Amino acid sequence: NKNEKWDIKDPKRYRYELATMGCRTRVYENIAGEKSSLGRGNLSFTTMNMPRLAIEARIKAESLEESGKKEAIERKAKEIFIESVHALSELIAEQLYARYQYQRTALARQFPFMMGNDVSKGGGKLSPNDQVGDVLRQGTLGIGFIGGHNAMMALYGEGHAHSQKAWDTLFEAVTEMNKVADEYKQKYQLNFSVLATPAEGLSGRFTRMDRRKYGIIPGVTDNDYYVNSFHVDVKEPITITEKIKREAPFHAITRGGHITYVELDGEAQKNVKAIAKIVKVMHDEGIGYGSINHPVDTCQACGYKGVIYDKCPVCQSENIMRMRRITGYLTGDLSTWNSAKRAEERDRVKHG
Ligand SMILES: [Zn+2]
Image (cartoon, rainbow, N blue to C red):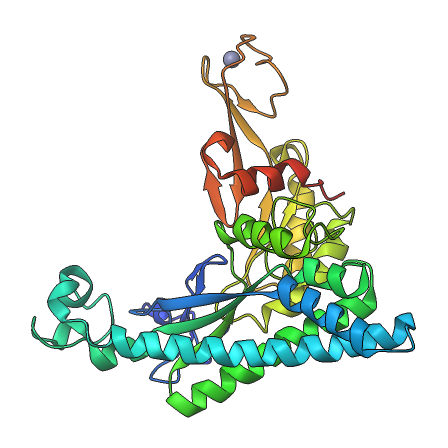
């Protein structure tokens, strides 16, 4: 996230600072101009259903591997999985490129604010009836993925939080996606990047589709959702430091956007030192964007804020607003989330 041009004495140093929209968008490196977040954005992204690739790989390996030995099947399944991650990344890159070709033909007047105010760098120079064309080269095209944890469960029956074999495979898969992103970046001179998709809607949809097709597979399709990108399963008991160490290496290889969060119980405001320590570990391990979640409940009757269990401790009201963070957003009230994300919140363990 550093830029060599950044200088603390420069009043315009913000030009060389990273601006990130959490896991949704990280726009910084630039093949079409200066490394900056200014005047740029994500044009479009497409998300890979990683668990499906792993389920298919496992089925195929079981039919190919006549010995029936566990290790041989796992080795074969991994090989097929990595190959299919590569192939699907290429398909996604081509699809994003085809879509980009269409996006280019839009006229500047279709985005009067964005282009007129040069919010999209270079747009200010266009006449209303010009095509946006090369202005879009400043944007990024994201190759995303979901359910790294569930994919590892499909391959090994173990997640990457505690199994080193699973961690290595997931890391290799995302590295493979980066190879494809780099290849297409050179080929089309466009900002292809790998995105740790937040997947508000997809996390439930892909799971339902795969359950219909493959039935219930433990740790894979037996939940209401797939776990976010490279995240450790929200249900997995793991310490804060360990969670950060498992996820941090993925940040450098998901430059289209990423987030790592830890869940605190109780009131963080009463333990300031713990917060400072967590931030230090995140910094030292190379977390690009980190977040510390702690419950903040508000009594709607008297305004008391804190962790409220059943009733407000001050006025006994049961009219409580519960604020939580999901996929990078602070969301006003749990009741407005979709059912998959509500199920995820219910399952989340606190990290000690
Ligand atoms: Zn109250």
